[in-house]
Image 1 (tube, protein in one colour):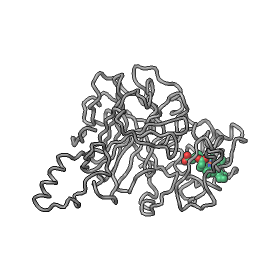
Image 2 (tube, rainbow, N blue to C red):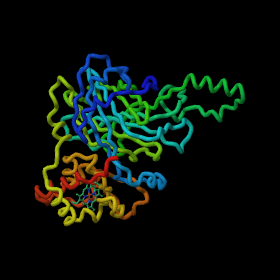
Image 3 (cartoon, rainbow, N blue to C red):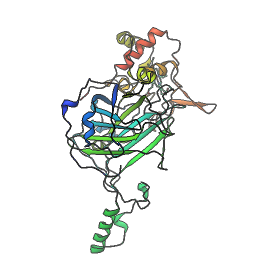
Image 4 (spheres, protein in one colour):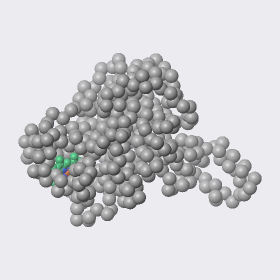
Length: 397
Ligand code: HEC
């Protein structure tokens, strides 16, 4: 982001042609230069908004008790999402509800900022990756924008750890005022990062400027975030259809890392290009099984022996909580989790978890899930369980 806009966004609700929980939308073709697009750019009036639901990511419990308490019973959020493209760049806008504006101070470690991330599947020929982290052989590129107070970055490389601390300058009174003024002039109000990931603990920041992106966020009784990036670069190819997932953090609830609301994969079709049928069908696949029978099968097969499945059931240290899994997972991912538990391994990082119940072991250098392999189940039963898992999600606020 080059400059933080304070302009108030006033997009008419009339522009929103929303169907609840849409998992595909069309990026309108425009001829504008998108490089400097922000929330108040006029071209958004050409875009159609779709409602995308974002659910609390509850797979792994945090060690921070206060944060866990603050996030108990979190609901799903309805975001309005639109996209435009000009054949070269893709711009995405997300508007999401947040009753309090949380901006992280530049020197405080106990405040958390609101923020959002737009994530793309890198390779549209692979099955869609694990959301948030990517998975082995299925990378993601993640654009993160946080709302931060002015940060002084002497190196201009967004390295917050090297920022100057006002308290440690050794100057007072007028000198300090002069120093403050100087810092203000140099400060950037930006916190924009780009990461690539190919599985848990493989997330790395791209610091060499090789991604030409621009993100911004504005608060007006709720947030509006925008991101512009090339349709295609070394990190991803969204030609035809970009597979996009969205995440938002609530600083007021100490949200950070996995403490966020997350969408499932959304197929963003680029108007005027041939859609990528594989991405579209994977992102929008509705489960074909019978959810009621799936619940019976899940009970009969002991899923609840390891997993917390409903919010009123006790939490389990044995396995990720599935309380919101239906809100941010595709049917394909759920099917794969049942049939090939080790294809994507959620490692867990709760150090309070019982040492005798690790979620994976290492065999020949590879993580192997401790989950029972259910590939013995017949196809219909698996589809029923998938349909049941898709119903597991919080109410939407
Ligand atoms: C023996 C314990 C155990 C049983 C029984 C079990 N699981 Fe799991 N499951 C795990 C563990 C551990 C993980 C995390 C490691 C991994 O990703 O495989 C997991 C992961 C998952 C995930 C991915 C979660 C995420 O956040 O991405 C899904 C979905 C899942 N299990 C569904 C099921 C279903 C459905 C059943 C019953 C048919 C079941 N599990 C039975 C232990 C178990």
